[in-house]
Length: 196
Image 1: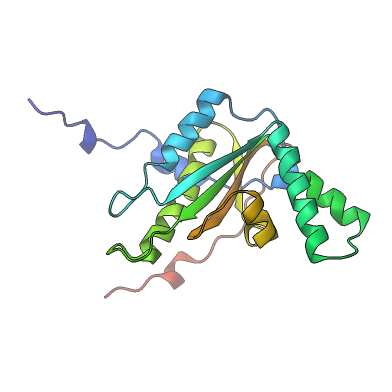
Image 2: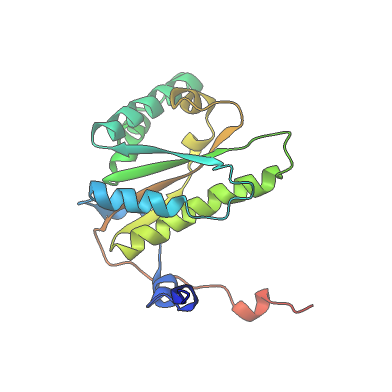
């Protein structure tokens, strides 16, 4: 007898996908995911298309004091690029990662010179980001996948220990919504479809 459960739809999976909305990192509060919930979210992030089984991504967790340390790294990087940053800008950067209880940095790790196209490796990292956003939503959290300037600044990337071929695919902010989420206008589906 064979197991046919793989042919059955996941209960309410489509409703989950159709109800997902980003929650602004500026409007998040705690509590964040527990250690067990965070592990589930991260595990979901590894169950994405991955041509060649390369695992072309890795994760940096910012929680607790790690969020404040990231704020210091951002403030220091601002000082290196701007000789006279305003106190408001420094305060903004010091508090940037304190907006949510947990932030996951998703690092895209592209291997060059192999048959697997670099574009596919980068898309796998993007799929990992989106899957973790959905996983957080499934557990009752709000999430926001953003990059902001700190994903591209060489001083920040160096401070995070990124190596050659690595980039930040996104920072996933996860928490509880401090205010009701608003639905935004979605694109007209028919205008996006052609048939061949």
